[in-house]
Length: 620
Image (cartoon, rainbow, N blue to C red; front, side, top):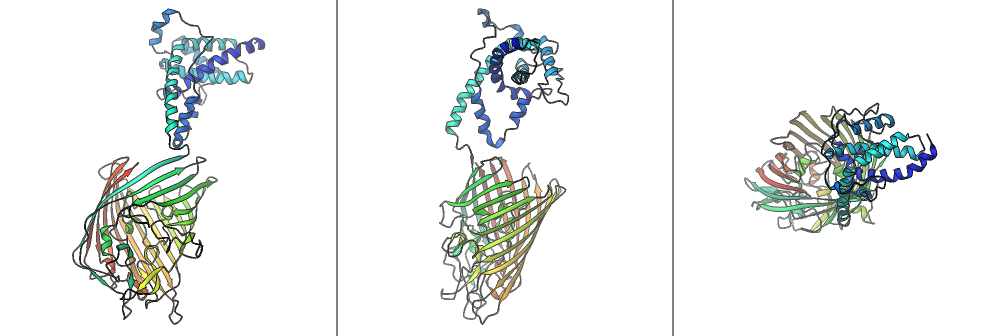
């Protein structure tokens, strides 16, 4: 062909169909939803956009401009106000335009989707659908002209004629672009952040608890706040026992998280989570010292902060990023250990068995949140490995006694800390087995009192004392050193049927007791914990989950003489929990739960305790 003639014609042509192409671009992905035979490269580019960055999809609309000048398109006279009958009907396979587009597709491969890039059109198309296909060919021809590849004069004239025939559709699409342009401007002015997504979780708890008789608890005084009950020994070195004669009142409380999740690359995640609450479960009325927020207490029925009710604390702060395809690294001053370890499909506290003792192993780890790092590695879809080191830094504990990782006098490696390794194995997409080992050191921050309330020494245990479930001293009310421990755990869930599953855990923990009094011998407290349960997915409704869980939280095998709280009278506490998660919709769930606690505080003579809870769970 004549190159000079082509070059002189092309600039005007490119100007025309660039305007045409841009006006069609917005409508193009919509039309393809109704055409099974046309899949264009433009739709592939739009569909590849990340759903989590939706503002980036909207921003592209601002780049679109409605056709202002189409000099090569013939303008109609006054009769253009009257709609031509041809504009009211679809484009049939027998029409000239249909055949013309098919011919362009065959020659230039401008509509993708089939192995041989053929059009394969055999059904009528609306004029807007047809315009979408035409747009793909305009793009392809533009690229060919830009690279000086040969495009026949006949094909250029065909495209020009098609563009003129569909001028009305292009004008309509241009008006839609202008409307979306103004909407985008409003969104940009009011969007929260271009990199951060904000969500919220709100939990409302109505809870009541009662006992069939007086309850024995190992604590010096019942007059202190429930979370501050202290353990002590009498003149005979026996644990001091109090008698709880009154039942607590029914409570109604809240607990909430505010979540800020940011991504800078699309594959990383920077998380900030704030927490506030005012919960104090009635079941805490019956516990021994060191057992606050354990049996009969829903995880979300708590205050969640060290500063008191209704105050706001930082609960999580970490950065999660990939290295390659299989390795992820999580670093931060406040990492949530339970995000990565000891998970179970049926005991996640927001959807399944939800009490402190049922949602996780009772002996597995003394650090709930901490400073450090976690590394995860996926060998394949069925096998993964995790390892993490955390120094204590927890939102619900006072900094003057805890949160040692940020204290210059104790630091990241010298006080309470844990090193955990877990191997996860998925079997046939229905069963999961997790093997876990934790090496921990627990700080001696628990005061031991005498009958008069005087401090006689410091022991280990309490909220950050696992695998001690209670409080341990030197056996005589004296001080012990920081206590190293080893804990082994196995955890599994198995979906036997689509609507029936089972789950369970076993923990074994050994804590070394090292008295500071050189006249006393070192020793150990060895204990085990057990859980078994049944789950009923989609019970009554798709997405619902019912669970029945049996738990023995702390069965002492050896070393009772070092327990100033937790051993009881050598009884074995066990618990039954029934929960039901009913999702009203994607943002609201109702979760009733019932807890039965036998031999509470490991006193065989203690009466049973009954706890009922109803939780409303909102997702913002």
